[in-house]
Amino acid sequence: MISRESLLLSRRDVAELLPLPECVAAVEEAFRLHARGETLPPAILGVPAEGGGFHVKAAGLKLSGRSYFAAKTNANFPANRERLGLPTIQGIVLLFDAESGVPLAVLDSIEITIRRTGAATAAAAKKLARSDSSTVTICGCGEQGRVQLEAIAGVLPIERAWAFDADPERAWRFAETRSRELSIEVRPAVDLGAALRESDVVVTCTPSRSPIVAKADVLPGTFLAAVGADSAGKQELEPAILARGKVVADSIDQCVEIGELQHAISGGFLRREDVYAELAEIVDGVKPGRTSDDEITVFDSTGTALEDVAAAAAVYEKAVERSRGVRFLF
Image (cartoon, rainbow, N blue to C red; front, side):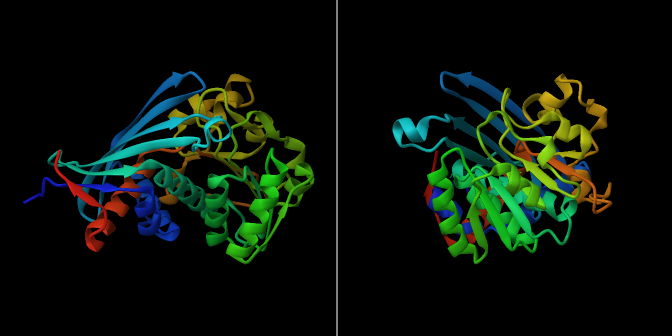
């Protein structure tokens, strides 16, 4: 018999219960299931607001033999940290038993979002980056940048990282802290173009609304993960980069509306049908990933509800196993 008690799980709970390698495994499984048609169709709703906006992402899947449904509501207000000392992204995830409708948990969404986004990049890097990739540039030195670097370093033999941020002091702090934590050489990128030309992997996770990565600075063999463009108008890559490379989307439907593809398609650089694949197809082996060392590969990452439900379910199962969280009845 299913308990009607729900769990309340804080950001600290999520961080302690969801190590990044386990999150990568859960997200990869979600993509495999999606490729096989074994998930509930993801849905997304966006609502603009003054100075930011809200979005709701929902989906369902079966993990560890149990069916789950999750709906995440996130608020995104880029000026929060400077203006109010608050995180840019705040929100909650509601997790349900998908066979009975029983609410299982309410989880903080910040850590879920950060970790599952890094996990998706790691899953893409395993298939789209060169296996000998040793240098990465991280554009955007916030919490997402922190996890992106950890995720990339966890699946590729990274020896050096360049850190770029609109705030140079933030890049210096990031470099110092990440060097110590990951035991790799991390340096602030004073000249972004030079750092990009040295890099095998480039990850962009900024709130930019105009390109920060130029086509001329992307050399053959580079893997780019474009993470920051997740709403209408946001952009980090020159559209010509996508026309030149093999493009893989986390969700084509989402990416043509809110990802880097929105600009590449509206600008006439490529068509929707030119997108090589969705990540689910690559992870499940339906299509090959990188097929030559000279290819430029691009992962357009807008963040999917499948990633959210996979991460939330993994946290919930471990919380139950370890008696974590606060139990309550609605």
